[in-house]
Image (tube, rainbow, N blue to C red; front, side, top):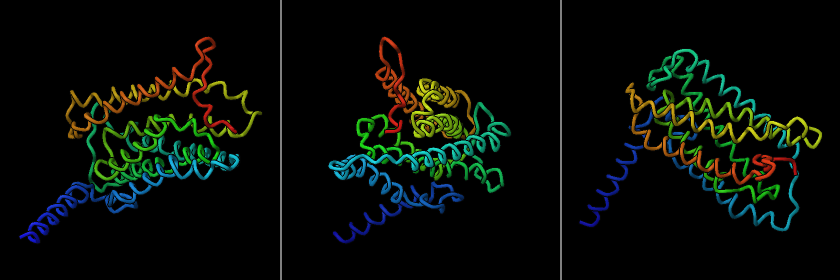
Length: 279
């Protein structure tokens, strides 16, 4: 009887796993690298957290911080290129051509346009994984004070969200958030690249104080755009509002709190992006 119950339980778990990660998944993207199973992505996230919060700081404890000047310049330059591509791809394949700004369902067909959009969502997911290096560089440069809850939450949650979008809903209404975020990252990583080039470029970085304002604006736009699903039904899952709206509000709160703490009350001089300046 016990063996029978164990076999039944194992079968039930296996069936539920297949239903959740195979049957519900988009068959067009489910076989793509890192998408089919949740375990590779979770392994990357867990390894990232272990390095950043435990092993990395212990490894650097008795070592001098690395400068990484050339690596940072190259890394940020590549992030700018990827962000430019994602921003343009999102506009050209969808939001400036065929997508409705009110409500847009996911096209699960295998048409060239539908596959193009799904591919863009997938590249966005891969970009979120590469951005984990932001924190790795903090650790290697002994900038541990910059590894805040906001930073860790943002870099942990975004890969998981984009993985879910790629696996289940690679397209449609929710992709505008990625397009807006890619635009913000063009500005942000351009600043980081110039800051890594050294003091001679500091006079060209007067616009740094607007980056956090731009980041908060994206969450307002994401909230308003997602909120339209309350009034319009085009087939895009309305249940997603239970996640996207609170998350947009929470992100806004965290960035706003960080913004307030990063300003001096008298001069209002922004320090929000100094975390990635050349050490």
